[in-house]
Each structure stands twice: as structure tokens, then as C-alpha cells.
Length: 317
Image 1 (cartoon, one colour):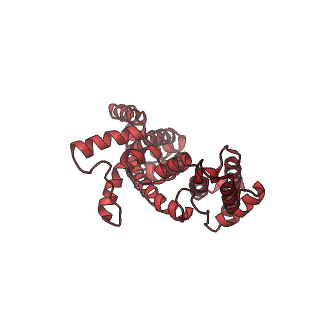
Image 2 (image 1 turned 180 degrees about the vertical axis):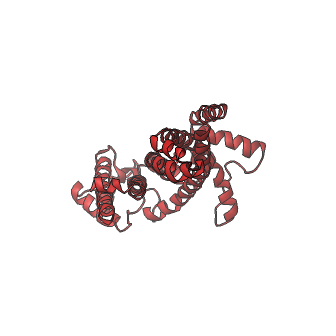
Image 3 (image 1 turned 90 degrees about the vertical axis):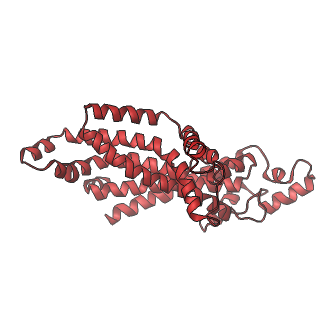
């Protein structure tokens, strides 16, 4: 097991390295001058050249990457070009905290709601109850997160007045109020994902219920609840984990438009603004953050595979 985990961690590190190389060199060949963007078009050539030297932009691209990567592994991504005096790490951590909170709340909603409904739909498959649930899941799957955010804003913000749209309060001022506000963008992110997860769980559990070992267990007089919990769910989770891992990675990486809809100062708005201002140090760090979330989630899913089914690690080593 340990050898399997070490192998997966090695793949994770190598993947992040490749992504960092691709990201850095991609931004190096994009047209535009970060120094000129910072100083403005009225800056003198001498001042532009001086700032390029300060930022290290006059060096070879390979040298710049080594310098950047050696600091990045320590958590130092340099300084923002549009927010003078502020490090990229501090800016990113401040914005990422909101995005991660929304992601965490979304995942909690996803797990609490999707599993019971998915199992319930599988238990009553090919019945009017199952048909009704499938119709409901297809409806929610067809609604984009940003439009779901608009609907929730109208219903809970304008009609029911449970929160004031666009008036996000900092946790430092009102912690409970900030968390309560973030529940609604979390719902906007989670609900379409819940619908997809319910359908996936329903199909996976239904497929397992048709296998011979289930019929054998029933013929031996085993309780339906025991069959479901100790046999069906364990085997169904192998395929379900893949999908849930992708969903969790997507949720934690952030939802740009949903944050814009609710006026939350998270990664989404910050990243869009950094791209428009050609603040490449911020954009590079944000890309690495998103990539790290996705790769770590996939690695954890692979490790969970081995925990659930030991045959997987034996075949992979």
C-alpha cells in the first residue's frame, strides 16, 4: 500500500511540474509587456527598460523559470503588478479562502443530498418515483450554475429577503453573517452537481443490483439493507468515486461566474481582473492553485480506490 501511495505522490509532483512549465512558458510567449502594462503607454523607454530589469524580464526565459520555480515551491510567487507592495501569495490566500469556503459548503451539500436520493432512486428504479426523480435531476442538470445563482438570488434575496444580494459582509465584521451569505452561492454551485451525482449513483447502484452475487445473497436470505450497505455500495463506489472526485475538484477550483453573481470577492473575480490587467504573476499562481486542487483530488481518489478494492494497487504496481 505504501509503495502504491508513494508512486501516486510521485506522479502528482511530476504533473504539477509539467503544468508549471507549460504555464510559465505560455505566458512568456503571449504578446504584451508586463512592464509597459504597469507603467502605461506614456512611460519613457528608459523607465520601461529599468522596470523590465527589476522584474527580471530581460533575462533568458529558462533562467526566469528556474528563479520563479525555486521561489514558488517555497510559496513565494512574487509580487502583483497591479497591487504594488502586495505579494501574490497574500492576495491569493485572501481570495482563495472565500472560494474554498464556497467549495466546502458545496461539497457538504453534495454528499448529504446526492447519496440518499441516488440510493433511493436505485431502490425504486423503473417506478413512477424513479421517473419523477430522473425528470427532476435532468431539469437541474440543464440549469447552469450562474443561472441557478440568479434564480436563488431572486427567490431568497429579493422575494424572501433572507440575504441582501451583492452586500457580502467580511467574516471579520460578521462571521456568521458571512457564512450564511456564502450558503447561497454554494447552493448555486452544488445543485446542478447534485443532480448529476444522483443520476450517477442511481445508475451505478442499479447496475450492481443486477449482478449474480446480489441474487445469491438474496437466495441465502440476507437482508436487503445488509446487501445494499455491505456489498452493493462498496462495489458501486469504485465508479462513483471517479465522478465525485472530478466534481469536488471542479467545485474547489472555483466558480468564476457564480462569485460574480453574488458579489463574493473570491478567486473568480480576482483571476478575471488579473488577466485583463496582464498581472501574470497572479495568473500563474492562480493556475497552479487550480491545477494543484485537481491533481490532488484525483490522487486521493486513486488512493481511495486501493482502500476500497486492494486488487487495484496490486495491478497498478
